[in-house]
Image (cartoon, rainbow, N blue to C red):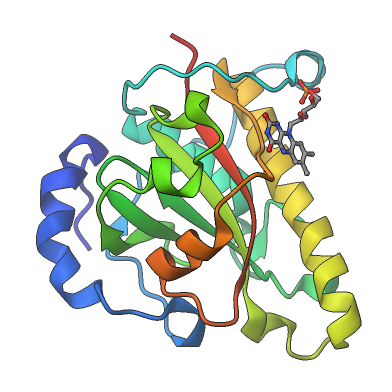
Length: 221
Ligand SMILES: Cc1cc2nc3c(=O)[nH]c(=O)nc-3n(C[C@H](O)[C@H](O)[C@H](O)COP(=O)(O)O)c2cc1C
């Protein structure tokens, strides 16, 4: 599969959108990335204690697009595969069901991150940031808004009463991974509970999957 630079995504993805416009992600079983992200540098980085010391919510974003290297590492940090042989993730999940799907809203479209193959898939072209975050004006120019969604299919084996609890807990780990990655790269981020979930559900074509939280990410200046 061809690796492409993310700044060229806008144009390319409008073309790719024709096939994916009417998808319903939560009833679609097979997930194949349309575009691979850059390989992630899994070593190095800043000392962990410094990163923890700098973890914070920042509500001011540059509109500058994230470099492909940064976007790739951000999505991997969120919920990528860190043990390739077992497909296990950077974030823990109850019974290892891996039910938190990470979507991404950009000025060009809404995408699904697919950890298997470390790539993304266009769900719908267009800029939905304002519509999805009507109360968070400060986030409207963030180049990336991550959205965490509980995949209902993966929660089928759980009692209905515990699905909400476990998916909320598991989502928290993903969000914290993003906070820590952002602190390590001096990026701005804040997790947001105030999300227009109905609008987002329609945009993403969700039927049973539940939108949990959003998290804009961008450069600080
Ligand atoms: C579940 C959750 C929902 C949140 N929702 C919002 C929100 O809708 N809007 C907002 O500006 N901040 C939101 N925050 C961020 C908190 O306000 C922030 O974490 C808190 O003020 C502590 O600041 P700190 O993250 O810099 O430590 C949320 C945080 C959590 C954990």
